[in-house]
Amino acid sequence: MKKILIIEDDLFLGDVLNQKLTNEGFDTILARDGLEGFEKIKSFKPDLILLDIILPKMNGYEILEAKQKDPSLADIPVIVVSNSGQPVEINRVLALGVKDYFIKAQFDPEEVLFKVREQLQKNGKLFSSVNALEGAMNQKLDIVSLEGKKIVWVEDDQFLNDIIGRKLSTTKCIFFHASEGEEALKIINKEMPDIIMLDIILSGMDGFEILRRIKDDSKTAHIPVIILSNLGQASDIERGKNLGAVRFLVKATLTPAEIIDQIKEVLAQDKI
View (cartoon, rainbow, N blue to C red):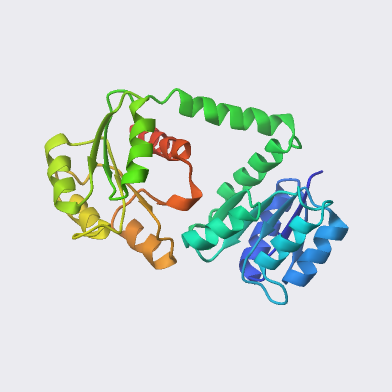
């Protein structure tokens, strides 16, 4: 039985995670403050840690720093579940060895469970049925073709656009790029793309206004829109979803390959 340590002071979230993981057959322990959590890491020696950042007595950064200094603990994988999605904070925990990052406003117990299994699999500690499950999911994405699909990318970061553009070019999709709102809307209305990837912080018209106009127009309202932004506050995520975005992704938490997988997932769901 694989051991999971949850370090979380939010009563509701801690109990939800604890119950969900216990029901799935994991041996779980829940610590309500950072100091207790770090002591449990040493005594319980978990196979994986779910860690909040803002904690009483010892915060998540301090736990990660202390864990890295102890060779007997350093290799235990950590998934952070935090209120913040600011890139500077995400980058800080990634530099401290964190394997994955969840924003509480986007909390989904099923997704957390999937990520726990994924990390345990990477460590060679997961049972074969889960290996088969993940293999099937990856195979499903592999057969989703982007060939001939029209994708509009609204992004003013040229570096990111170049990376994604090169990545998408290998899929044989039809790729359009716009760096500001008016240009994006002209392309969208002319090309009627299969999917739109949309940044929020843009010069002139911001992404929320672009999204509102797309969804208010009966000709384009059906087109799925994924927001990909540096913003990750709960209010931003809620606003994006209310305006009709199918997903809200934080740039700092995804690789280009994972962004392509997100596009494939949405297009696959759109066919159902």
